Image 1 (cartoon, rainbow, N blue to C red):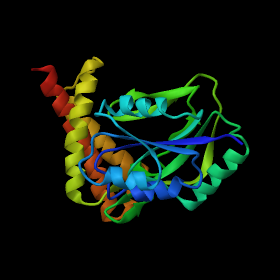
Image 2: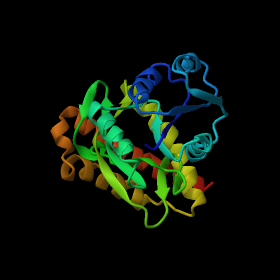
Image 3: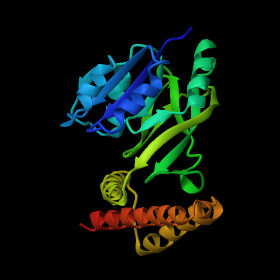
Length: 251
């Protein structure tokens, strides 16, 4: 049977990390936590689970997660954020894949997000499919910060696991606004370095398209008032991102 490493990056995650660790303790042969110098009780909670705990100043989302991969001793790695955990069905799916010696190079899973106490089953937030379990000899973290993703070598096999990756995304509306401000700044800087440009057209059209896509075409309206707020937030995020990019390119 193949062994499995679980990698998690953390920063002040005392309210989430125990739930995450509880969900993987029965399937992991090792758990590696890379912590960005937390000032809360994250480290003490992690050490109660016997994890391999490393303190590392934050390098960037992609860089920090690849740093975590480098500290995993097994080829197959399940990568999680501290505010995520595995559903019971997903745990069983991973157990079966492990018993079958991981017959695929990589595995995807649907992610279901909890928004202020409610699970969101429609719109841009679901199924929000993620590739999180893979052979690290054939893939690594890539993408553009803060939107990292695992990139596999050409020709690698993949399959979808049953069950959901549960994401406790936001506990309050204030967290949504704070995260939006943080992420749009990171995105705008990354887009500028890529040579991308913004204009007035993109400030108006792209947010409108983002709202209609999530709220209408992806059935976000079935989430009720939360669906309207989420679709509006995605549109707002899009507008702020392009506005910050516009300011950067004109500075």
